[in-house]
Image 1 (cartoon, rainbow, N blue to C red):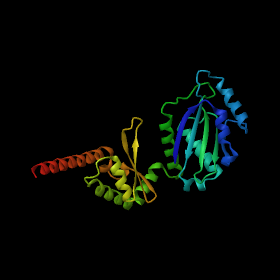
Image 2 (image 1 turned 120 degrees about the vertical axis):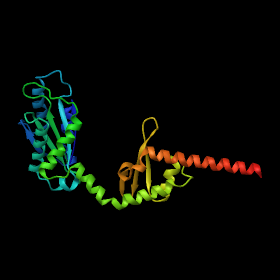
Image 3 (image 1 turned 135 degrees about the horizontal axis):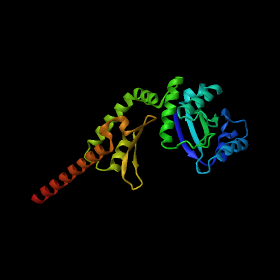
Image 4 (image 1 turned 45 degrees about the horizontal axis):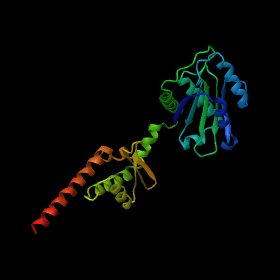
Length: 258
């Protein structure tokens, strides 16, 4: 299960997105609120916001996503428990909250909105809320017997052991060829071997790393082997380039002697 979180100011628009018939939305959680309709829920939140005019991003917006197979078997009361426990982990038990599950896709997920302002007018800190959300979701998943992101990574690592080994061997074969002297030639040769190598660039066009797609699986280079990481790959390409330069120099020298 993964948790994402941020502080927002646009509650009404967010609630209307969450409570959307096109998303097959279901209201699964509501605490310290009497309203049902989004406009009335917004009004109740705003009454508390009147206690603190300094905090502009006065609502926490969270998205909680169990893995698809876990999400498929969760009932309304399960989602409500997830929301309640998640709030508790973040110290938000005494704050208004409302949550909707989107059922329009196989990957069901919960949109949870929590008033950042408590009933005394205090604004809860938003520092590191993204990281805190991730850790809170992990703790809730463990308590409820749901899969964590680490569980998913471990399963993927076990299930793809042979595929990753095959990828590494193909990479070694490709990078050993002197003709592979830059990113373009590397990508083309990997494609010839049935692997889509995708260079990840930063905003300045510098290489950050690679992703590899093979037999329906998508891997970061670090998930396969450390020798496929950016620095080592660039080093290997440079070695090949130097080998080519030496070969060309030797050929020219031989031609002059003839």
